[in-house]
Image 1 (cartoon, rainbow over the protein chains, first blue to last red):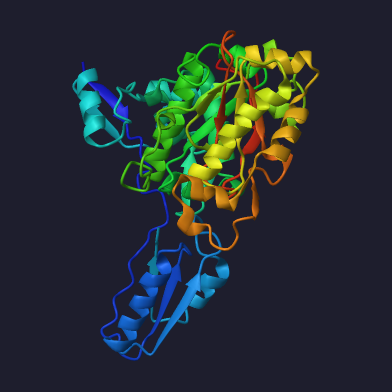
Image 2: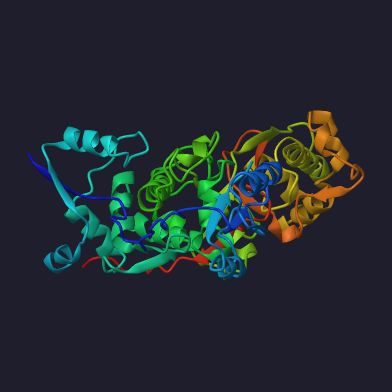
Amino acid sequence: MTIEVLDPTHEGDSREFKIASGLKDLKGSRIGIISNGKRGTYPFFNALEELLKSKYEVKEVIRVVKKNYSAPAEEEIMTEVKKWDAVIAGVGD
Amino acid sequence: MAHMESLLKSKTYKLDDHLAVQEYFHAHHWTDGLPIVPPTSRSVQDLLAWSNLEPEHLIGIEPVRNRRITAEKLAVNSVMAGCVPDHFPVVCESFSAMLKEPFLLHGATASTGGCAILIIINGPIREQLRMSGGFNALGSSDRATTVIGRAIRLILCNLLDARPGDVDRSTLGHPGKFSYCISEDEENTSWLSLAEDREMPKGTSAVTVMSAGSPRQIMNEWTTNPEEILDTFVAEIKSCMRHYSIWPGNYAIVIPPQLRTHFENAGWSKKDIRKYVYENARIKRKEWADCGKGSVVGSKGEQEYIALTDEDHLLVIAAGGPAGGFGAIIPPWFGTKSKAVTQPLGVCLDCGPE
C-alpha cells in the first residue's frame, strides 16, 4: 500500500544568503577580520594579517573580536563591515 | 479536517510501504538513526487539531538564519518521533522556550561542546501524559518524555540543520541527544517544584529548557546529614569545573527519594540546598594544575571561581526511583552563555478535537 508522507525539513523557508562576489585584487584593499575571540585565533590571525600585508599588499587589516564567541556578531560590528572591502570570519578553538 | 489538509504546505512523497519510508528518510538524513513513524497528512493534522493550531502558526523565528518555525513542521517531526496529539503542546512550548534570546539556541546546538537540550516538565500535564519521574528518570522512564525529547532533537536536525557535521559541530555529544526530557516527581516530595521555584504559579504546567551536558552520577549511602550528602554533589560539580569548564552557569542536580528523605527529615528545602551549593561549589584556579591544565593557571592561581553566580542558578530536581543513595549533577553546556528558560504551558486541558 502506498504511503504519502510529508517533508520534515524547513524547505528553504528562510532568508536567502548569497556569497558576495570576490575581489579582483587584494592590493590596496581594506580587509576586516572578525574573530570569535578564542585563544587560537590570535596567533593564526596575526600570521594571516602579516601575510595579507606583505604578500598581497592589503592596505589595512581591521581586527575585531565578538563579545560572545557562540553568538552572532554584534550590530556595531555589522555596521563596521559595510566600510570594508572584504571580511574574513574566523573560528578558533 | 479537509480544510486543514489543504493548508498543509510541506512537500509530499509517495512511497511504497513502511519500510520504503524508513529507507527514504534515513537516506535523506532526516532521522536520528532510529526508525520513525511515517508523518502522514492525517497524523500531522491530528496533532495540529489537538492544539488548535493552524499549520502556519508561527512558533517563533530562529534569529541567526531568520528561519521561521511553524506548527506544521514541528508536528511533522513530532509524529516522526512517536508523539501522539496530546504530547504536541509540550513540544511546541519547549521549542518556543528554546527560541528565547537568553537560551542562545544556535550556539548551544552548533558548539563543539556537544550539549543536548534538557527539558524538565512540571505541573498537571505530567499526570495527563502519564509521565514518570521515578525509576530510570534520566533514561527511558516513560513514553511521553521519551518521544517529546526525541521530537526536539529531530526538529533541531530537520529545521535548523543541526545534524552531526552540519550545523552540529559536537566533538563528542552525548546520549541525551537522542532524547533528554524528564518530569519532576512532584507527588513524592514536600518541596516546591522546579517551576514554582522559577516563579510559575502553583498548579501550572510548565517546561524548563537547559543546554545541558551529560548527567554525572554520584552516590552517598553512608550518611543522613544534608551537608555531607551535598558535599558529594558539590565534589562532582567541582570535578566538572576542574576537568571540563571552570565557568559558572545553570547546573542541575537530580535528587531521588532515598536522599530526599534525609533532606526533608532535616527540614531542608530546595532553597537551603541551593544556598549550600552556592557557598561551597568553588575552586581555585591553581587546581587546574592537578589535572593536567597547569599551563593555563598563569598568575591567578589563588583566584576563586564559583559554580553559580547566583544561588537561584541551580536547578534542583526531585526525580528518580525509590531505592538507592544516588543522585546526579548535570552541568551547563558552557558557563552562562545559554541560560535556562521556564515557560508555562499554554495548554487547555479540556481542549482537543470534538
